[in-house]
Length: 76
Ligand SMILES: [Zn+2]
Image 1: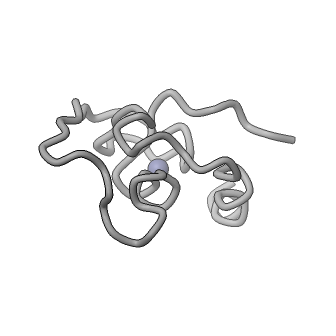
Image 2: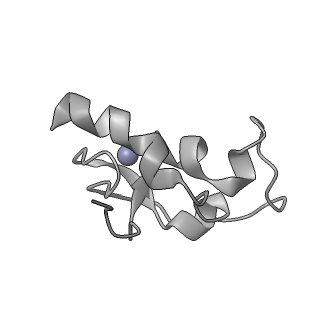
């Protein structure tokens, strides 16, 4: 079963799943500003972590849900 596309994603998950980071290095626009806030990550479920929208990581790779699944089992 697939999770819905996350509204918020934390600093841990974003670089793992964001397209701008898919090559292992940040490839997004220079000086891109992300509005971070402390909240709950919709991907890993951690609370009180710096979160922002998936678009601030260049949106997530198509199989973000598959990549994330193994990790989810650890805390579920
Ligand atoms: Zn997360």
